[in-house]
Amino acid sequence: MKPLKIVVLDRDTLPDRPFQLDFPHELITYGSTAAAETAARIAGAEIIVTNKVQIDAAAIAANPQLKLIAVTATGVNNVDVAAAKAAGVAVCNIRAYGNESVAEHAFMLMITLIRNLPAYQRDVAAGLWQQSPFFCHFGAPMRDLNGKTLAVFGKGNIGETLAGYARAFHMNVVFGEHKHAETVRAGYVSFDEALQTADVVSLHCPLTEQTKNMIGEAELKRMKAGAVLINCGRGGLVDEEALVAALKYGQIGGAGFDVLTQEPPHDGNPLLKARLPNLIVTPHMAWASQEAMNRLFDILLDNINGFVAGKPQNLV
Image (cartoon, rainbow, N blue to C red; front, side, top):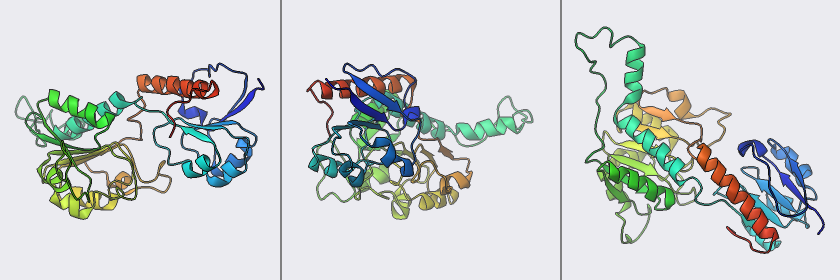
């Protein structure tokens, strides 16, 4: 068998483990790849491994020898899947590797904001406890998760995992229907009911034309005054300018975001400029526990080995 040329475009997003492949191959890796570098680097490749580097129709057309695009994530927005299918190029992704990692991160943001942990950290650092006339320091209002309602948008593996964690804390969990759905499916509540009744709203849905800015000014106004909004799904699900305004004017109680509309935010972002005590932003790392990253790498190797062996899996 002739060695297959494999090009890895953003190796630095993967664990530092060897590519253990079961077939003759030539492996070329790049820590990261800019858009202007992509065409030259993938020239002649039979297998492309990419996390977020764009593989468009032109790149596919320029490489008739290409057999497989192995995406090292669940989302495949960076690949022109239609062009790949038309050219007979397989596209595979990674599934169900980070359910616990993302759900735990969302839960961490939720409980941190409900109990106003950042405000108390700042108060202690500022010496307010030391100056208190009591044994304790009464600062920002603190609430229990027990008895609160969590509305989850996205009833996939991550959403279901988060729901399990929430129920363990005796929360009432509902799953919200699509924003413009004409009917409400069994096991769901309407979009408006989910927004209006929830103490915490957590987003775990993909970014599409239908979900873009699904939470905007009007939706934020319909949420409870003390409600917390969590987004560990995709940047762009929430109107970020509207969210900053809602937080500043007390329309909602807090927000925890792991994703932004532009990543990395080279040009800045309203959420990064806000510097609000009830806003937490993390750098798109909810997925990246050590356990999850190792599962991802195992699945990637299985995807590539399986495809070459004639047993493709996780095809998009």
